[in-house]
Length: 102
Image (cartoon, rainbow, N blue to C red):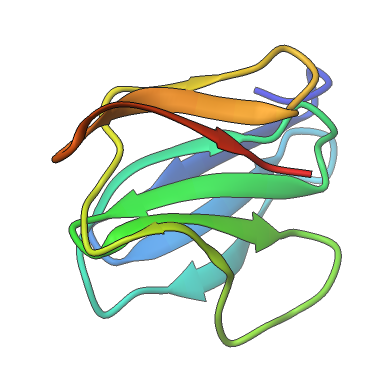
């Protein structure tokens, strides 16, 4: 949940937002790789998305075809997000990882 009104969820290949106030689903993106994990950035204007190809930061304020990779070629799972969204932490193939976000 984000701000008690919006829920970020995913199916195998799609990332969605459900708005509780309007009762509408909005498709954020489709992925060619199965989505393994997704979570809101604490600001609410972006989402972290993990696939087998890496972990990406999707800007939710504008429609884009792709997103910058935080880590390429390997997923970060589990993914822990700094409370203010400054960094992500997790396990990758190389071991424990910390990546600055913004």
